[in-house]
Length: 401
View 1 (spheres, one colour):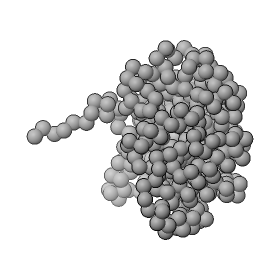
View 2 (cartoon, helix red, strand yellow):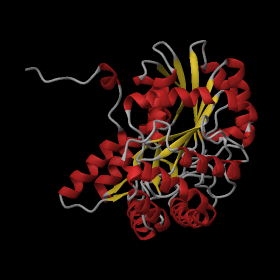
View 3 (cartoon, one colour):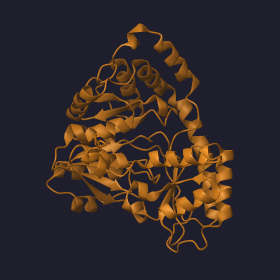
View 4 (cartoon, one colour):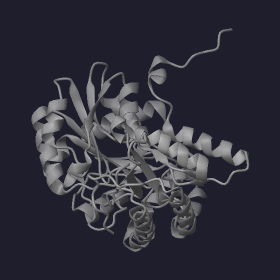
Protein backbone atom coordinates (compact mmCIF):
# COMPACT_ATOMS: atom_id res chain seq x y z
CA UNK A 1 0.00 0.00 0.00
CA UNK A 2 1.28 3.46 -0.91
CA UNK A 3 2.23 5.53 2.10
CA UNK A 4 -0.64 7.91 2.94
CA UNK A 5 0.07 11.58 2.35
CA UNK A 6 -1.20 14.46 4.46
CA UNK A 7 -3.91 16.74 3.11
CA UNK A 8 -3.10 19.52 0.66
CA UNK A 9 -3.97 22.06 3.37
CA UNK A 10 -1.38 20.56 5.68
CA UNK A 11 1.23 20.25 2.95
CA UNK A 12 0.73 23.93 2.10
CA UNK A 13 1.88 24.95 5.59
CA UNK A 14 5.50 24.97 6.75
CA UNK A 15 6.26 22.59 9.59
CA UNK A 16 5.36 24.23 12.88
CA UNK A 17 8.51 26.05 13.95
CA UNK A 18 8.39 25.19 17.62
CA UNK A 19 8.00 21.49 16.95
CA UNK A 20 11.18 21.71 14.87
CA UNK A 21 13.01 23.56 17.66
CA UNK A 22 11.96 20.88 20.14
CA UNK A 23 13.33 18.23 17.77
CA UNK A 24 16.69 20.04 17.58
CA UNK A 25 16.86 20.25 21.36
CA UNK A 26 16.03 16.57 21.91
CA UNK A 27 18.58 15.42 19.32
CA UNK A 28 21.33 17.51 20.91
CA UNK A 29 20.45 16.33 24.42
CA UNK A 30 20.40 12.70 23.24
CA UNK A 31 23.93 13.25 21.94
CA UNK A 32 25.01 14.42 25.39
CA UNK A 33 25.21 18.16 24.69
CA UNK A 34 24.06 20.78 27.18
CA UNK A 35 21.21 22.79 25.70
CA UNK A 36 19.94 26.08 27.11
CA UNK A 37 16.58 26.56 25.46
CA UNK A 38 15.45 30.19 25.36
CA UNK A 39 13.41 29.74 22.21
CA UNK A 40 9.92 28.75 23.37
CA UNK A 41 7.63 30.85 25.58
CA UNK A 42 6.87 28.13 28.12
CA UNK A 43 7.09 29.53 31.68
CA UNK A 44 9.55 27.78 34.00
CA UNK A 45 7.71 28.98 37.11
CA UNK A 46 5.13 26.77 38.87
CA UNK A 47 1.40 27.38 38.92
CA UNK A 48 0.53 29.28 42.13
CA UNK A 49 -0.19 26.88 44.98
CA UNK A 50 -3.66 28.31 45.80
CA UNK A 51 -4.79 27.47 42.24
CA UNK A 52 -3.39 23.95 42.61
CA UNK A 53 -5.34 23.59 45.85
CA UNK A 54 -8.52 24.69 44.08
CA UNK A 55 -7.89 22.17 41.31
CA UNK A 56 -7.36 19.38 43.83
CA UNK A 57 -10.67 20.19 45.54
CA UNK A 58 -12.65 20.61 42.33
CA UNK A 59 -11.25 17.39 40.85
CA UNK A 60 -12.79 15.36 43.69
CA UNK A 61 -16.35 16.49 42.93
CA UNK A 62 -18.24 13.91 40.84
CA UNK A 63 -20.05 16.63 38.87
CA UNK A 64 -16.67 17.65 37.44
CA UNK A 65 -15.97 14.14 36.12
CA UNK A 66 -18.46 14.50 33.26
CA UNK A 67 -18.41 16.19 29.85
CA UNK A 68 -18.23 19.99 30.09
CA UNK A 69 -20.61 22.26 28.19
CA UNK A 70 -19.28 23.63 24.92
CA UNK A 71 -19.21 27.24 26.13
CA UNK A 72 -17.82 26.39 29.55
CA UNK A 73 -19.21 26.44 33.07
CA UNK A 74 -21.38 29.48 33.70
CA UNK A 75 -19.77 29.85 37.14
CA UNK A 76 -16.34 30.15 35.54
CA UNK A 77 -17.64 32.61 32.94
CA UNK A 78 -19.19 34.74 35.70
CA UNK A 79 -15.82 34.92 37.43
CA UNK A 80 -14.20 35.98 34.15
CA UNK A 81 -16.86 38.66 33.64
CA UNK A 82 -16.24 40.01 37.15
CA UNK A 83 -12.48 40.17 36.57
CA UNK A 84 -12.89 41.72 33.12
CA UNK A 85 -15.08 44.51 34.48
CA UNK A 86 -12.63 45.24 37.30
CA UNK A 87 -9.58 45.13 35.01
CA UNK A 88 -10.90 46.91 31.92
CA UNK A 89 -14.08 48.63 33.11
CA UNK A 90 -16.19 46.67 30.62
CA UNK A 91 -19.30 44.72 31.66
CA UNK A 92 -19.85 41.46 29.75
CA UNK A 93 -22.79 39.07 29.63
CA UNK A 94 -21.24 35.79 30.85
CA UNK A 95 -23.94 33.71 29.15
CA UNK A 96 -23.56 35.24 25.68
CA UNK A 97 -20.25 37.11 25.43
CA UNK A 98 -17.73 34.70 27.02
CA UNK A 99 -16.59 31.19 26.07
CA UNK A 100 -14.01 28.92 27.71
CA UNK A 101 -11.27 27.62 25.40
CA UNK A 102 -8.70 24.83 25.42
CA UNK A 103 -6.10 27.58 25.55
CA UNK A 104 -6.15 30.75 23.44
CA UNK A 105 -4.21 28.94 20.67
CA UNK A 106 -7.10 26.53 20.18
CA UNK A 107 -9.62 29.37 20.03
CA UNK A 108 -7.52 31.38 17.57
CA UNK A 109 -6.97 28.33 15.39
CA UNK A 110 -10.66 27.40 15.31
CA UNK A 111 -12.07 30.90 14.97
CA UNK A 112 -11.44 31.18 11.19
CA UNK A 113 -13.37 27.93 10.69
CA UNK A 114 -16.37 29.53 12.38
CA UNK A 115 -16.28 32.70 10.25
CA UNK A 116 -14.44 32.25 6.95
CA UNK A 117 -15.34 30.47 3.73
CA UNK A 118 -13.13 29.50 0.78
CA UNK A 119 -12.38 32.67 -1.18
CA UNK A 120 -12.47 34.89 1.93
CA UNK A 121 -9.39 36.71 3.17
CA UNK A 122 -7.94 37.47 6.58
CA UNK A 123 -5.34 40.13 7.33
CA UNK A 124 -2.56 38.73 9.51
CA UNK A 125 0.51 40.51 10.92
CA UNK A 126 4.04 39.93 9.64
CA UNK A 127 5.91 39.17 11.83
CA UNK A 128 3.18 37.43 13.79
CA UNK A 129 2.03 34.34 15.64
CA UNK A 130 1.88 31.56 13.00
CA UNK A 131 -1.55 30.27 14.10
CA UNK A 132 -3.38 33.26 12.56
CA UNK A 133 -2.31 32.23 9.07
CA UNK A 134 -2.57 28.50 9.75
CA UNK A 135 -6.15 28.74 11.02
CA UNK A 136 -7.08 30.88 8.03
CA UNK A 137 -5.55 28.34 5.64
CA UNK A 138 -7.35 25.41 7.28
CA UNK A 139 -10.62 27.30 6.71
CA UNK A 140 -9.82 27.40 2.98
CA UNK A 141 -9.38 31.17 3.09
CA UNK A 142 -6.34 33.28 2.18
CA UNK A 143 -4.03 34.92 4.71
CA UNK A 144 -2.96 38.38 3.49
CA UNK A 145 0.04 39.71 5.38
CA UNK A 146 0.39 43.26 6.64
CA UNK A 147 3.69 44.65 7.86
CA UNK A 148 4.73 45.48 11.41
CA UNK A 149 7.68 47.86 11.07
CA UNK A 150 10.16 48.60 13.83
CA UNK A 151 10.18 52.33 13.06
CA UNK A 152 6.42 52.40 13.76
CA UNK A 153 6.77 50.57 17.04
CA UNK A 154 5.54 47.33 15.43
CA UNK A 155 2.03 48.80 15.25
CA UNK A 156 0.32 48.81 11.84
CA UNK A 157 -0.84 52.02 10.23
CA UNK A 158 -4.52 52.02 9.37
CA UNK A 159 -3.71 53.27 5.86
CA UNK A 160 -1.58 50.16 5.30
CA UNK A 161 -4.39 47.90 6.50
CA UNK A 162 -6.78 49.67 4.16
CA UNK A 163 -4.49 49.08 1.19
CA UNK A 164 -4.21 45.38 2.07
CA UNK A 165 -7.98 44.91 2.45
CA UNK A 166 -10.28 43.90 -0.41
CA UNK A 167 -13.99 43.22 -0.70
CA UNK A 168 -13.14 39.62 0.31
CA UNK A 169 -11.51 40.61 3.62
CA UNK A 170 -13.60 39.42 6.56
CA UNK A 171 -11.24 39.55 9.56
CA UNK A 172 -8.07 41.26 10.74
CA UNK A 173 -5.87 39.77 13.47
CA UNK A 174 -3.99 42.02 15.91
CA UNK A 175 -1.92 41.04 18.94
CA UNK A 176 -0.81 43.27 21.83
CA UNK A 177 1.27 42.81 23.90
CA UNK A 178 2.84 41.38 20.80
CA UNK A 179 4.47 38.04 20.15
CA UNK A 180 7.24 38.10 18.97
CA UNK A 181 8.20 41.79 19.30
CA UNK A 182 6.97 42.63 22.80
CA UNK A 183 5.31 45.82 21.49
CA UNK A 184 2.23 47.26 23.18
CA UNK A 185 -0.52 49.38 21.61
CA UNK A 186 -2.36 52.40 23.05
CA UNK A 187 -6.13 52.78 23.23
CA UNK A 188 -5.95 55.30 20.38
CA UNK A 189 -4.80 52.52 18.04
CA UNK A 190 -7.81 50.41 18.89
CA UNK A 191 -10.11 53.40 18.44
CA UNK A 192 -8.76 53.94 14.93
CA UNK A 193 -8.81 50.22 14.17
CA UNK A 194 -12.40 49.70 15.31
CA UNK A 195 -13.62 52.71 13.35
CA UNK A 196 -11.90 51.53 10.20
CA UNK A 197 -13.06 47.92 10.59
CA UNK A 198 -16.64 49.05 11.15
CA UNK A 199 -16.59 51.14 7.97
CA UNK A 200 -15.17 48.22 5.99
CA UNK A 201 -17.40 45.57 7.56
CA UNK A 202 -14.39 43.64 8.89
CA UNK A 203 -14.29 41.66 12.14
CA UNK A 204 -11.35 42.36 14.48
CA UNK A 205 -9.77 39.36 16.23
CA UNK A 206 -7.62 40.66 19.08
CA UNK A 207 -5.09 38.30 20.67
CA UNK A 208 -4.56 39.49 24.25
CA UNK A 209 -2.85 36.39 25.64
CA UNK A 210 -0.15 38.52 27.30
CA UNK A 211 -2.42 41.23 28.71
CA UNK A 212 -1.18 40.67 32.28
CA UNK A 213 2.53 40.54 31.41
CA UNK A 214 3.75 44.12 31.07
CA UNK A 215 6.53 46.37 32.33
CA UNK A 216 4.97 49.82 32.61
CA UNK A 217 1.35 50.67 31.80
CA UNK A 218 -1.29 47.90 31.90
CA UNK A 219 -2.32 47.03 28.32
CA UNK A 220 -5.83 47.91 27.21
CA UNK A 221 -8.59 45.72 25.79
CA UNK A 222 -10.20 46.40 22.44
CA UNK A 223 -13.54 46.41 24.28
CA UNK A 224 -12.60 49.63 26.01
CA UNK A 225 -13.73 51.02 22.65
CA UNK A 226 -17.54 50.76 22.96
CA UNK A 227 -18.09 50.29 19.21
CA UNK A 228 -16.04 47.06 19.32
CA UNK A 229 -18.91 45.28 21.08
CA UNK A 230 -20.66 44.53 17.78
CA UNK A 231 -17.77 43.35 15.62
CA UNK A 232 -14.79 42.07 17.59
CA UNK A 233 -13.58 39.07 19.55
CA UNK A 234 -10.66 38.95 21.98
CA UNK A 235 -8.67 35.91 23.08
CA UNK A 236 -7.18 35.58 26.56
CA UNK A 237 -4.96 32.93 28.12
CA UNK A 238 -4.51 31.58 31.62
CA UNK A 239 -1.30 29.90 30.46
CA UNK A 240 1.07 32.84 30.74
CA UNK A 241 -0.72 34.64 33.58
CA UNK A 242 -0.69 31.67 35.94
CA UNK A 243 2.19 29.58 34.51
CA UNK A 244 -0.17 26.84 33.39
CA UNK A 245 0.64 26.21 29.73
CA UNK A 246 0.18 22.47 30.19
CA UNK A 247 -3.34 22.83 31.55
CA UNK A 248 -4.75 24.10 28.22
CA UNK A 249 -7.33 26.64 29.27
CA UNK A 250 -8.18 30.16 28.12
CA UNK A 251 -11.21 32.18 27.14
CA UNK A 252 -12.69 34.37 24.43
CA UNK A 253 -14.86 37.44 24.94
CA UNK A 254 -16.71 39.42 22.33
CA UNK A 255 -19.74 40.07 20.21
CA UNK A 256 -22.41 37.49 21.01
CA UNK A 257 -22.81 36.27 17.39
CA UNK A 258 -19.04 35.66 17.11
CA UNK A 259 -18.92 33.81 20.44
CA UNK A 260 -21.95 31.75 19.42
CA UNK A 261 -20.37 30.76 16.11
CA UNK A 262 -17.12 29.76 17.80
CA UNK A 263 -18.97 27.69 20.42
CA UNK A 264 -21.03 25.95 17.72
CA UNK A 265 -17.83 25.07 15.87
CA UNK A 266 -16.15 23.83 19.05
CA UNK A 267 -19.16 21.65 19.90
CA UNK A 268 -18.38 19.66 16.77
CA UNK A 269 -14.65 19.23 17.27
CA UNK A 270 -13.92 19.13 21.03
CA UNK A 271 -15.64 18.50 24.34
CA UNK A 272 -14.43 21.55 26.22
CA UNK A 273 -11.88 22.15 28.95
CA UNK A 274 -12.14 19.92 32.05
CA UNK A 275 -14.48 21.57 34.54
CA UNK A 276 -12.09 21.33 37.48
CA UNK A 277 -9.48 23.24 35.45
CA UNK A 278 -12.05 25.88 34.44
CA UNK A 279 -12.99 26.42 38.07
CA UNK A 280 -9.42 26.56 39.38
CA UNK A 281 -8.16 28.92 36.67
CA UNK A 282 -11.11 31.32 36.86
CA UNK A 283 -10.91 31.31 40.66
CA UNK A 284 -7.31 32.49 40.35
CA UNK A 285 -8.35 35.73 38.65
CA UNK A 286 -9.44 37.16 42.00
CA UNK A 287 -5.86 36.76 43.24
CA UNK A 288 -4.23 38.62 40.34
CA UNK A 289 -3.71 41.89 42.30
CA UNK A 290 -1.30 39.95 44.52
CA UNK A 291 0.11 37.45 42.00
CA UNK A 292 0.55 39.78 39.00
CA UNK A 293 3.12 42.24 40.38
CA UNK A 294 5.37 39.46 41.69
CA UNK A 295 5.27 37.65 38.37
CA UNK A 296 5.99 40.83 36.42
CA UNK A 297 8.94 41.56 38.72
CA UNK A 298 10.49 38.21 37.79
CA UNK A 299 10.26 38.97 34.07
CA UNK A 300 11.45 42.55 34.54
CA UNK A 301 14.63 41.28 36.23
CA UNK A 302 15.25 38.85 33.37
CA UNK A 303 14.43 41.43 30.71
CA UNK A 304 16.77 44.03 32.18
CA UNK A 305 19.59 41.51 32.56
CA UNK A 306 19.29 40.42 28.93
CA UNK A 307 18.98 43.97 27.61
CA UNK A 308 22.11 45.03 29.49
CA UNK A 309 24.16 42.21 27.96
CA UNK A 310 22.77 42.65 24.45
CA UNK A 311 23.42 46.39 24.63
CA UNK A 312 26.99 45.78 25.75
CA UNK A 313 27.75 43.45 22.85
CA UNK A 314 26.17 45.74 20.26
CA UNK A 315 22.90 43.96 19.46
CA UNK A 316 20.28 46.40 18.12
CA UNK A 317 17.05 45.85 20.07
CA UNK A 318 13.92 47.69 21.22
CA UNK A 319 12.99 47.19 24.89
CA UNK A 320 9.65 45.36 25.01
CA UNK A 321 6.65 46.92 26.71
CA UNK A 322 4.97 43.59 27.41
CA UNK A 323 5.07 39.79 27.04
CA UNK A 324 8.24 37.89 27.95
CA UNK A 325 10.19 38.10 24.71
CA UNK A 326 13.14 40.06 23.34
CA UNK A 327 13.18 40.70 19.58
CA UNK A 328 16.71 41.55 18.49
CA UNK A 329 18.51 42.19 15.20
CA UNK A 330 20.92 39.60 13.85
CA UNK A 331 24.48 40.66 12.94
CA UNK A 332 24.70 42.65 9.72
CA UNK A 333 24.48 40.42 6.65
CA UNK A 334 23.53 37.25 8.53
CA UNK A 335 20.12 35.66 8.04
CA UNK A 336 17.94 34.72 10.97
CA UNK A 337 18.30 30.98 10.43
CA UNK A 338 22.04 31.16 9.81
CA UNK A 339 22.56 33.16 13.00
CA UNK A 340 20.38 30.93 15.18
CA UNK A 341 22.04 27.81 13.76
CA UNK A 342 25.52 29.21 14.30
CA UNK A 343 24.75 30.11 17.90
CA UNK A 344 23.25 26.70 18.60
CA UNK A 345 26.09 24.73 17.04
CA UNK A 346 28.74 26.77 18.85
CA UNK A 347 27.10 27.17 22.25
CA UNK A 348 24.07 24.90 22.69
CA UNK A 349 21.90 27.99 23.20
CA UNK A 350 18.65 27.64 21.28
CA UNK A 351 17.06 30.86 19.98
CA UNK A 352 14.06 31.35 17.69
CA UNK A 353 14.74 32.62 14.13
CA UNK A 354 12.63 35.63 13.21
CA UNK A 355 11.55 34.01 9.95
CA UNK A 356 9.42 31.61 11.97
CA UNK A 357 7.00 34.54 12.32
CA UNK A 358 6.90 35.63 8.68
CA UNK A 359 9.08 37.02 5.92
CA UNK A 360 9.51 40.35 7.71
CA UNK A 361 11.03 38.49 10.63
CA UNK A 362 14.14 38.05 8.51
CA UNK A 363 17.10 39.73 10.20
CA UNK A 364 15.66 39.19 13.70
CA UNK A 365 15.78 36.56 16.42
CA UNK A 366 13.67 36.02 19.54
CA UNK A 367 14.66 35.25 23.11
CA UNK A 368 12.07 33.86 25.52
CA UNK A 369 12.64 34.98 29.11
CA UNK A 370 11.27 31.70 30.43
CA UNK A 371 14.29 30.31 32.21
CA UNK A 372 15.92 31.10 35.59
CA UNK A 373 18.31 34.04 35.85
CA UNK A 374 21.32 31.76 36.30
CA UNK A 375 20.58 29.86 33.08
CA UNK A 376 19.84 33.10 31.23
CA UNK A 377 23.16 34.58 32.39
CA UNK A 378 24.99 31.47 31.20
CA UNK A 379 23.25 31.55 27.83
CA UNK A 380 24.02 35.23 27.32
CA UNK A 381 27.65 34.73 28.35
CA UNK A 382 27.98 32.00 25.73
CA UNK A 383 26.52 34.28 23.06
CA UNK A 384 28.75 37.16 24.16
CA UNK A 385 31.83 34.96 23.85
CA UNK A 386 31.04 34.49 20.15
CA UNK A 387 31.31 38.27 19.65
CA UNK A 388 28.67 38.07 16.87
CA UNK A 389 27.98 41.81 16.57
CA UNK A 390 31.05 43.58 15.24
CA UNK A 391 29.42 46.91 14.42
CA UNK A 392 25.88 47.86 15.52
CA UNK A 393 23.41 48.71 12.76
CA UNK A 394 23.50 52.42 12.05
CA UNK A 395 19.68 52.57 12.12
CA UNK A 396 19.31 50.62 15.35
CA UNK A 397 17.27 52.17 18.16
CA UNK A 398 18.99 53.04 21.40
CA UNK A 399 18.52 50.43 24.11
CA UNK A 400 16.93 51.70 27.29
CA UNK A 401 16.09 49.78 30.43
